[in-house]
Length: 360
Image 1 (cartoon, rainbow, N blue to C red):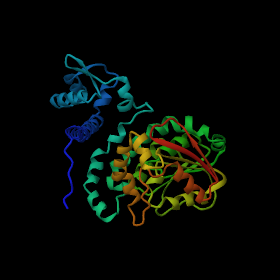
Image 2 (cartoon, rainbow, N blue to C red):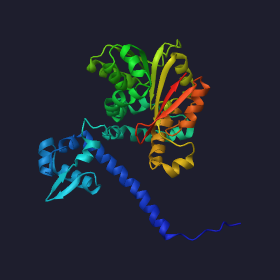
Image 3 (cartoon, one colour):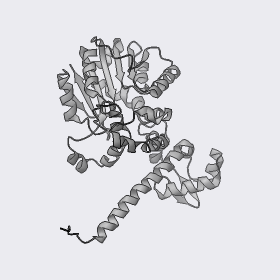
Image 4 (cartoon, rainbow, N blue to C red):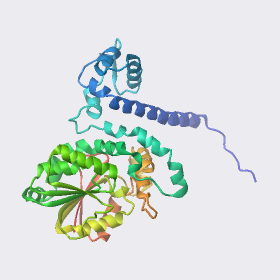
């Protein structure tokens, strides 16, 4: 029996086309943001006032015709402002996200490994067939740099100054001399900020990314600190000796192939009086709630397929939590199952991350 077909709705056709090509526009603009960052164009425009394409080309020693096309596209996208008479300006407000190295809102780093992300996309059809994803090292050394840049300024401006003082008794412990670890430490930026602030404490970073650990060692040498040690977690595991006063996991539990094992390892490593601080993407318990309440949901699922869930499924039997998979209810359940008895959510006014303080 033939299935009855409903009439085509012209309004829906128009809306679907606008939506689909709108996302294509986003792809193109993202690529131009990558170029603006990589070529130093935003930094050259930052606090420079209105510039012509000739003036910006002279400042950057790049070809004027290419600069002109880039400027016009950025103005059409509303990222920079066209002020007339062939002059373009990066506003102070946009510069906070794109150019200012001292801005807590600097976010341009998330575009810096765009070519590597897209190269990974070419390999994902095989993952859809086999179920096995790609770990973060699949993006190469620039992938580690990109992640480092995404979170670097938050660690620099918020972690020590705003976050740690909200965790009861922690600043006093670290000031006196404590033992701390960052699991999934990446390039080590969080650890290095804490190590500089608390020279009497010892800090240990654990990660399985070879590229990230290489960056971490370079960053440690540049910082000149002596109270940080980095460990390849694949061979040098977190000791189960209840010796750590403070443990952190920044945006990594949802990426792990076996997060429950990691949480149990943290419980075995932490002192009975210790504190575990978790940062992980903010999400609701159900897809329906995320769909209704989180305007970033589509992007988060894209990031998940391209990175987070792919990493979490990069070994057979991986949990595959994905970007939005470690919400508060899941975090409470998993930490309780591992033997933690105290759980508190904190609000540090970050639109993307949720923060939890957990204790044995």
